[in-house]
Amino acid sequence: MTDPQGLYFQSVPDDGRISVVATANGALDYQWPNQLTLSAETLQSVRDRSAQYYFSVARHAPWPKPPWVINSATDADTYRNALIWLDETSGNTPVFNHPRAVALSRRDLSAARLQGVEGLTVPRCLRFRLDGAGAAPGAFERGGFDYPVLVRPHSGQAGRGLIRIDGPQDWTRLEQSRWFGQIHYMIEFVDFATEQGEHLKCRVMMVGGQVMVRHVKANVGWNVHNRAEGSIEGFEDRELAVIDQLEANPAFAHVCAQVAARARLDFVGMDLGIDPQRNRFVMFECNPSMTVFFPRRHNATSADLARRDRLQTPLDAAVRALLAQPDRWQSAIAGFHEDLPSCRDLLAGA
Image (cartoon, rainbow, N blue to C red):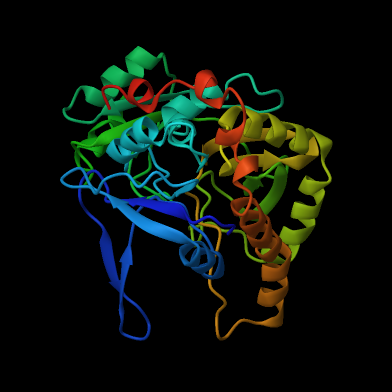
């Protein structure tokens, strides 16, 4: 990071909850949900060159008015109060992943903002509270959806709590969910199978004008994520070739450039279903909280290290370079604050 000293902004989640897990060496690791993820090396360099600030609704220290801020509270559902406060107190200070752009990455707002991106199918998304037997069917009717639809809790990641509703008989499944009573999202289902019957999910990262594919996963079914049932055996041997094909595809590059321009975030990821042979791309989500950096394993194979050097090391270098140049951040561009509504307006009623 560059001098003078800036601020690394963190926050307690609105519900006051964080996770604690035991590491392999027996230590406790405190995990903050849905926040900006950096590599351990980059995070340490940020902390070495910045003051630490934790926001809490119950109590927070006076704002120190730094020359720049790195915002790690990057989920509008988890950190609504912190984002509103940071937006209203930071003024024209450059903020990496500015709270207004983070607010616009909320699933429903992001889906609305990215409608019309040329070459990208963006499923419609409706936000509602699952607080009664009629809540989900009511949202279905209000949104004008057709079956099937996907329903997921706002706090669910890696497919946790995601349910596909194929007909009226399935609504009762939601009443048995551990997330009953919480905010949920209803999402239009769009099939993205290739002609070969594979479902390919790509995670692409956009940082400082650069587009980098972080991974591609494959499954015989539509619900594609790590260790999912139906994962296609041996696909890891084809993954890098698919990534090379994507990164050389002008249609894919055009989609990513449009998304980055609308998102107005400095570091953002997008998960999407891909059918490269037919240039079909279906957005799943687009936000700055995606996990993309993993520590080096002591038992890593030569293939693991090669994959890391291909997919993680260049991305880490690009992020670190951008973090060191606050004048290149989106919020330092003239007109940024006038172009985007305030967080309070964006997240009203949340």
